[in-house]
Image (cartoon, rainbow, N blue to C red; front, side):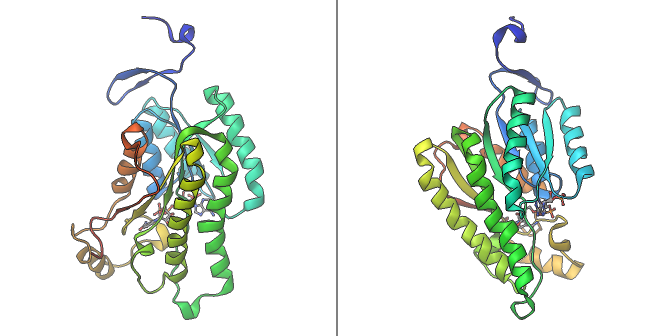
Length: 272
Ligand SMILES: NC(=O)c1ccc[n+]([C@@H]2O[C@H](COP(=O)([O-])OP(=O)(O)OC[C@H]3O[C@@H](n4cnc5c(N)ncnc54)[C@H](OP(=O)(O)O)[C@@H]3O)[C@@H](O)[C@H]2O)c1
């Protein structure tokens, strides 16, 4: 067999299925990949042989643990700090991504963007201040719009963007008015990005998790609340991060090549 160095390709081995693949490694950028759903997306994408750039906001240590897990399993991953609510910082962030691609993959672009980072809301409409509203807008919608706009020149033609939405874009629970409305807006943006970037054959979809047992918004509460959610779910349980991570990672190939501008709910049949 030819040596990898002489083939001008990235040759790597997926330790999990021991398959050697002779092609350029696909790269996914996952925002909020340090914990919860984003962590699971990053780990499952790496298991499928993808290179991973993940971002964290405050929890550098959690991000490093994900990176270590991927590297220990024979994968390739890098973490970068990013606050998706800090729009002026995106110009510098894009430079960091470009540098990372060149330094670690000898590439000028990447293949898949997962807009996963987000924060939750636990306030009734009457208690929602302008400050809470603006923070939710900045991180969960405005940041996603401008980050995607800034990163899209680095995404390959024929690449893919997945926006992590929420079941709460479809159904309502008290305390999530702004959050749910912003996720609905994100699903709208998904279709517009799909429309405008079709010229570059970039597919854009949103994945809407149901109730997933992570630290999001302070977690899923006490036993009674968790039982209520489980009984509102056809499959009778809360989701776990891997329920989403496994699915999103499975989208990151040409197997999903004709799926575009869609909202896909992964919630075990919640609120049907
Ligand atoms: N869990 C659910 O039930 C559920 C349901 C539907 C949709 N979702 C959506 O799924 C996505 C991930 O949620 P999760 O459950 O995995 O939440 P999580 O466990 O709280 O993790 C949130 C992730 O986002 C990052 N993050 C938070 N604020 C950020 C900011 N301002 N800038 C950049 N990154 C930031 C965090 O980084 P640090 O680690 O550095 O803090 C962390 O990596 C969110 O978009 C959420 O709306 C979740």
